[in-house]
Image (cartoon, rainbow, N blue to C red; front, side, top):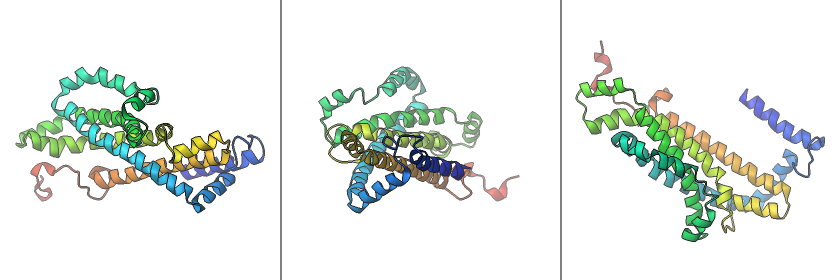
Length: 262
């Protein structure tokens, strides 16, 4: 059904502009966009802009993960009262759109790569942090009690019970943040950029090159979809309870061999 719906959407994109149900000046047919993408690939422009944008998007996402994951684990696991105290402030920060704060960001960080990566990172931190906090706080208390009764210490509880149990929530936040990274890519590349897919879209808009606008937007969308699929695959390969295979981040069985269970 998903493939059918996607195929119908692409077919409508090709057919409606050709029948002039939609003005082809504003929405060109899919085939026209694909021809433009092929031309950009042949002259190397699309590959160059794509690599630059991927570097910015994944740098911001990586920085957000390195900040948001430990922050969520600490606030949700060891300092729940501190998390409750900081929650209103964190909610306020999460609602502070970096596009609105662009002039402040430029004032402090300039218009270089640091400002662009910071803009992406700021938007990606919060879904990772909040999802990790929710995962830690929603660990089954009966599971924790059972682990304590078997003599697990605080660090063992965290590594073998809390961390694996909260991992699905973390991956949910990571996938959401990855979508935000590509969403914010165009806005971040408005700040004095001279390359990247966002710059390509803005430059094409200024020159009223509709096909190039759609080519850039289609490429960004495709990269976001591929990234989400890769994160889904990573989640299945990593978390044992979401896949029939084994993963490195899995509960340790609490020391009871399978053959000795009664």
